[in-house]
Length: 167
Image (cartoon, rainbow, N blue to C red):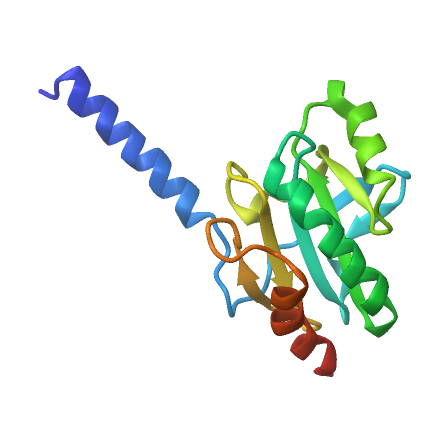
């Protein structure tokens, strides 16, 4: 018979394995996603086929997020005519909608609330910032930049520009 500690550890192990198993794999088709933007527009992966997509999870209370968002915005403004789309999804609660709207006004790409999004295939969103890069063919090319390199102009140039040049 298992002790309560062994049972708890076993349960946590199964839960953790389930979270990791649900995470998308680089080089495979990206999971489908959909979101209603703060402006009320419906955004979905099917409608973005043929574009390079940066799906970015953030929060107003997240210092690294606040550092990365201006770089994403500059890059988006420079390259959206080449087929780049950025979709920022705030993980904050509905009670924080006004705060999210205020922060999102500074950026030209669409933002949405996690409560208004379907992103189940991207695994458990628990660390921020969390970013996924999807190529024109719907293939996940980069996942989870959190804990890796910071998103800035140099990393965006290196990772995204080659995908924008592919047809």
